[in-house]
Length: 114
Length: 114
Image (cartoon, rainbow over all chains, first blue to last red; front, side, top):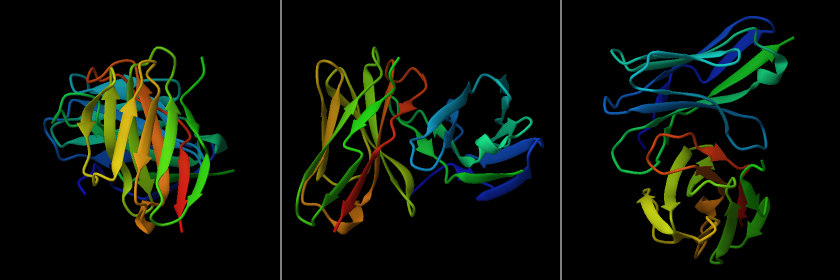
Protein backbone atom coordinates (compact mmCIF):
# COMPACT_ATOMS: atom_id res chain seq x y z
CA UNK A 1 0.00 0.00 0.00
CA UNK A 2 0.97 3.64 0.04
CA UNK A 3 3.64 4.59 2.48
CA UNK A 4 6.22 7.15 3.26
CA UNK A 5 9.33 6.10 1.35
CA UNK A 6 12.86 5.75 2.63
CA UNK A 7 16.02 6.10 0.66
CA UNK A 8 18.05 3.31 2.25
CA UNK A 9 16.93 0.12 3.95
CA UNK A 10 20.22 -0.22 5.84
CA UNK A 11 22.84 2.15 7.20
CA UNK A 12 26.09 1.21 8.89
CA UNK A 13 28.15 3.76 10.83
CA UNK A 14 31.10 3.82 13.20
CA UNK A 15 30.54 4.59 16.86
CA UNK A 16 30.97 8.29 17.46
CA UNK A 17 30.09 9.31 13.91
CA UNK A 18 26.96 11.27 13.04
CA UNK A 19 24.13 9.36 11.34
CA UNK A 20 21.66 10.72 8.84
CA UNK A 21 18.53 8.75 8.01
CA UNK A 22 16.41 10.03 5.15
CA UNK A 23 12.77 9.77 4.28
CA UNK A 24 10.74 11.00 1.30
CA UNK A 25 7.01 11.58 1.42
CA UNK A 26 4.53 12.19 -1.35
CA UNK A 27 1.53 13.92 0.22
CA UNK A 28 1.75 17.71 0.22
CA UNK A 29 -1.14 17.85 2.68
CA UNK A 30 0.80 15.99 5.38
CA UNK A 31 1.04 18.27 8.39
CA UNK A 32 2.79 16.21 11.03
CA UNK A 33 5.81 13.90 10.97
CA UNK A 34 7.31 11.59 13.56
CA UNK A 35 10.45 9.50 13.85
CA UNK A 36 10.35 6.21 15.73
CA UNK A 37 13.05 3.78 16.83
CA UNK A 38 12.23 0.10 17.06
CA UNK A 39 14.52 -2.37 18.78
CA UNK A 40 14.17 -6.09 18.37
CA UNK A 41 11.22 -7.47 20.32
CA UNK A 42 9.86 -4.05 21.21
CA UNK A 43 7.33 -1.63 19.90
CA UNK A 44 8.26 1.63 18.13
CA UNK A 45 9.64 4.21 20.52
CA UNK A 46 8.92 7.90 19.92
CA UNK A 47 12.07 9.91 19.17
CA UNK A 48 11.03 13.32 17.87
CA UNK A 49 8.24 14.96 15.91
CA UNK A 50 7.82 18.05 13.76
CA UNK A 51 4.87 19.98 12.43
CA UNK A 52 4.69 21.24 8.88
CA UNK A 53 5.02 24.88 9.98
CA UNK A 54 8.59 24.15 11.10
CA UNK A 55 11.69 23.11 9.17
CA UNK A 56 13.94 22.02 12.01
CA UNK A 57 13.56 20.67 15.50
CA UNK A 58 16.22 19.50 17.92
CA UNK A 59 16.16 17.03 20.77
CA UNK A 60 18.80 15.31 22.78
CA UNK A 61 21.43 14.21 20.22
CA UNK A 62 18.78 14.17 17.49
CA UNK A 63 17.66 16.72 14.94
CA UNK A 64 14.81 16.41 12.47
CA UNK A 65 14.85 18.46 9.29
CA UNK A 66 11.80 18.98 7.11
CA UNK A 67 12.06 20.24 3.53
CA UNK A 68 8.54 20.72 2.25
CA UNK A 69 9.70 21.92 -1.14
CA UNK A 70 11.12 18.52 -2.05
CA UNK A 71 8.99 16.57 0.45
CA UNK A 72 11.97 15.27 2.37
CA UNK A 73 12.46 14.46 6.02
CA UNK A 74 15.68 13.50 7.75
CA UNK A 75 16.79 12.38 11.17
CA UNK A 76 20.28 13.26 12.31
CA UNK A 77 21.80 11.43 15.26
CA UNK A 78 24.93 13.00 16.75
CA UNK A 79 27.77 10.90 18.16
CA UNK A 80 26.04 7.62 17.34
CA UNK A 81 26.31 4.97 20.03
CA UNK A 82 25.89 1.17 19.93
CA UNK A 83 22.57 1.60 21.74
CA UNK A 84 21.29 3.52 18.73
CA UNK A 85 21.33 0.33 16.65
CA UNK A 86 17.70 -0.30 15.69
CA UNK A 87 15.21 0.13 12.87
CA UNK A 88 14.14 3.73 12.37
CA UNK A 89 10.76 4.63 10.89
CA UNK A 90 9.43 7.93 9.69
CA UNK A 91 5.67 8.41 9.81
CA UNK A 92 3.30 11.10 8.65
CA UNK A 93 -0.20 12.25 9.36
CA UNK A 94 -1.59 12.92 5.92
CA UNK A 95 -4.51 14.92 7.21
CA UNK A 96 -6.88 12.88 5.04
CA UNK A 97 -9.16 12.12 7.94
CA UNK A 98 -9.82 13.54 11.34
CA UNK A 99 -8.19 11.70 14.15
CA UNK A 100 -4.75 10.28 14.67
CA UNK A 101 -3.74 8.07 11.78
CA UNK A 102 -0.11 7.58 10.80
CA UNK A 103 1.32 6.27 7.56
CA UNK A 104 4.69 4.64 8.10
CA UNK A 105 7.73 4.31 5.90
CA UNK A 106 9.49 1.02 5.38
CA UNK A 107 12.23 1.56 7.94
CA UNK A 108 16.01 1.89 7.94
CA UNK A 109 18.11 -0.59 9.87
CA UNK A 110 20.89 1.36 11.58
CA UNK A 111 23.93 -0.64 12.65
CA UNK A 112 26.57 1.02 14.81
CA UNK A 113 29.99 -0.60 14.66
CA UNK A 114 32.26 -0.27 17.72
CA UNK B 1 4.14 6.71 34.52
CA UNK B 2 3.49 3.27 33.09
CA UNK B 3 3.64 2.90 29.34
CA UNK B 4 1.19 1.23 27.00
CA UNK B 5 0.56 -2.33 28.14
CA UNK B 6 -0.49 -5.07 25.76
CA UNK B 7 -1.55 -8.58 26.69
CA UNK B 8 -0.81 -11.28 25.94
CA UNK B 9 2.71 -10.92 24.53
CA UNK B 10 2.47 -14.08 22.46
CA UNK B 11 -0.41 -16.07 21.05
CA UNK B 12 -0.60 -19.18 18.90
CA UNK B 13 -3.92 -19.90 17.25
CA UNK B 14 -5.27 -22.22 14.58
CA UNK B 15 -6.89 -21.16 11.33
CA UNK B 16 -10.59 -20.48 11.77
CA UNK B 17 -10.32 -19.56 15.44
CA UNK B 18 -10.83 -16.10 16.81
CA UNK B 19 -8.61 -14.03 19.09
CA UNK B 20 -8.94 -11.04 21.39
CA UNK B 21 -6.02 -8.75 22.17
CA UNK B 22 -6.00 -6.25 24.99
CA UNK B 23 -4.42 -2.82 25.40
CA UNK B 24 -4.16 -0.48 28.38
CA UNK B 25 -3.15 3.03 27.33
CA UNK B 26 -0.94 5.45 29.22
CA UNK B 27 -2.88 6.96 32.09
CA UNK B 28 -4.79 10.00 30.92
CA UNK B 29 -4.56 9.10 27.24
CA UNK B 30 -7.93 8.92 25.57
CA UNK B 31 -7.09 7.84 22.03
CA UNK B 32 -6.08 4.26 21.27
CA UNK B 33 -4.93 3.07 17.85
CA UNK B 34 -4.06 -0.38 16.56
CA UNK B 35 -1.47 -1.26 13.93
CA UNK B 36 -0.42 -4.48 12.27
CA UNK B 37 3.26 -5.05 11.58
CA UNK B 38 4.50 -7.69 9.14
CA UNK B 39 7.82 -8.07 7.29
CA UNK B 40 6.10 -7.72 3.93
CA UNK B 41 3.66 -4.86 4.55
CA UNK B 42 5.37 -2.99 7.35
CA UNK B 43 3.27 -1.03 9.82
CA UNK B 44 -0.33 -0.64 8.74
CA UNK B 45 -3.12 1.22 10.48
CA UNK B 46 -6.07 -0.87 11.64
CA UNK B 47 -8.31 1.53 13.56
CA UNK B 48 -8.47 4.29 16.14
CA UNK B 49 -10.82 4.68 19.07
CA UNK B 50 -11.56 7.82 21.02
CA UNK B 51 -14.20 8.22 23.72
CA UNK B 52 -15.44 4.69 23.04
CA UNK B 53 -16.10 5.50 19.37
CA UNK B 54 -14.24 4.30 16.33
CA UNK B 55 -12.70 7.40 14.80
CA UNK B 56 -10.85 5.92 11.84
CA UNK B 57 -10.58 2.57 10.13
CA UNK B 58 -7.87 1.21 7.87
CA UNK B 59 -8.19 -1.09 4.88
CA UNK B 60 -8.71 -4.36 6.67
CA UNK B 61 -11.59 -6.84 6.29
CA UNK B 62 -14.51 -6.87 8.67
CA UNK B 63 -12.98 -9.84 10.50
CA UNK B 64 -10.89 -7.22 12.32
CA UNK B 65 -12.84 -5.29 14.90
CA UNK B 66 -12.23 -3.40 18.07
CA UNK B 67 -13.77 -1.51 20.91
CA UNK B 68 -12.87 0.91 23.64
CA UNK B 69 -14.15 0.99 27.17
CA UNK B 70 -15.01 3.95 29.36
CA UNK B 71 -11.61 3.74 31.07
CA UNK B 72 -9.95 4.06 27.61
CA UNK B 73 -8.73 0.48 27.62
CA UNK B 74 -9.19 -1.18 24.25
CA UNK B 75 -9.54 -4.62 22.75
CA UNK B 76 -9.26 -5.82 19.21
CA UNK B 77 -10.75 -9.01 17.87
CA UNK B 78 -9.89 -11.04 14.83
CA UNK B 79 -12.40 -13.70 13.80
CA UNK B 80 -11.97 -16.64 11.44
CA UNK B 81 -8.20 -16.42 11.59
CA UNK B 82 -6.16 -16.89 8.42
CA UNK B 83 -2.47 -17.75 8.08
CA UNK B 84 -1.85 -14.24 6.75
CA UNK B 85 -3.04 -12.74 10.03
CA UNK B 86 0.22 -13.81 11.65
CA UNK B 87 1.83 -10.54 12.68
CA UNK B 88 2.86 -8.26 15.49
CA UNK B 89 -0.17 -6.27 16.62
CA UNK B 90 0.73 -2.94 18.14
CA UNK B 91 -1.40 -0.66 20.23
CA UNK B 92 -0.61 3.02 20.58
CA UNK B 93 -2.13 5.71 22.74
CA UNK B 94 -2.15 9.48 22.62
CA UNK B 95 -3.60 12.20 24.80
CA UNK B 96 -6.20 13.30 22.30
CA UNK B 97 -7.29 12.51 18.76
CA UNK B 98 -6.37 14.47 15.68
CA UNK B 99 -4.29 17.10 17.46
CA UNK B 100 -0.98 15.77 16.20
CA UNK B 101 0.20 14.64 19.60
CA UNK B 102 2.70 11.76 19.52
CA UNK B 103 1.50 8.18 19.53
CA UNK B 104 3.18 6.00 22.13
CA UNK B 105 3.35 2.31 21.36
CA UNK B 106 3.28 -0.81 23.47
CA UNK B 107 5.54 -3.77 22.81
CA UNK B 108 2.86 -5.61 20.89
CA UNK B 109 1.21 -9.00 20.81
CA UNK B 110 2.90 -11.52 18.54
CA UNK B 111 0.16 -13.61 16.91
CA UNK B 112 1.04 -16.81 15.10
CA UNK B 113 -1.68 -18.59 13.13
CA UNK B 114 -1.01 -22.21 12.23
